[in-house]
Amino acid sequence: MTPSATPGVGGASLNPANAGRRNQRRREERADVRTWTSDPMPAGLVLAGPVAAEIWLRSSNWHTDLFARLCTVSPSGRSRNLSDGILRLEPGEEGRVITLGTAADGEVTGADDGVVRVRIRMWPIGIEVRAGHRLRLQVSGGAHPLVARNLGGGERLGSATRMVPADHDVFQDPEHPSALLLPHALLA
Image 1 (tube, rainbow, N blue to C red):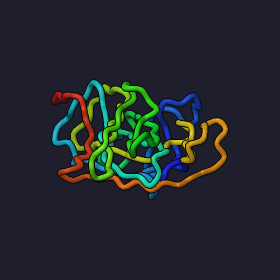
Image 2 (cartoon, rainbow, N blue to C red):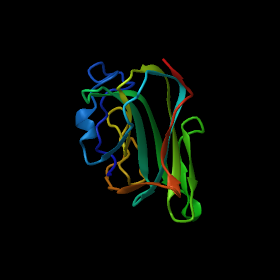
Image 3 (tube, rainbow, N blue to C red):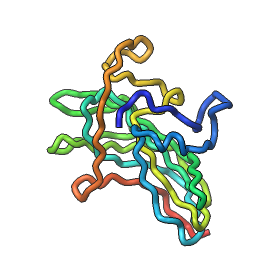
Image 4 (cartoon, helix red, strand yellow):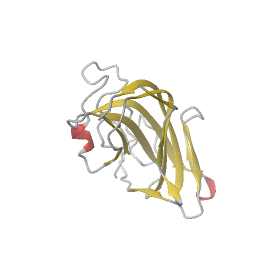
């Protein structure tokens, strides 16, 4: 997954042509967007409260962003956004990775193998997921113009001119359990 050029489709935007819930199909087909999709819900489910994505990753460039988006997927396959979150990362002292965000945005913790755990807090939700629908998590290196591009060179955002690519390796194994963290659910 390469950051910075990934388009933002839908979400909290002042641009009415791109705001709100939008079809995510074209975004999810991109090579720089990783997705995970649940099985169809056997019964309706009500989700209300905070949402977070916990992503374990290694990057070739820690001047980067990590964007997470929760979507619902209809039985016909149409994916629509529900909740977003982003965390801006940068290299810290002694090989650590830090975030420029606040605790309300998320947190970063390191591991001995060079992989870091990034917890991205997303907008709270209140929705009924109907029987037969699925949940999908998207992870990417950005969502421009929804969020200002991070060009990856460590320069100030408003005056950056040099784009430095990054490759992210996202892990999902027993030692690095990437996950979507949902609020308590009630059967509808």
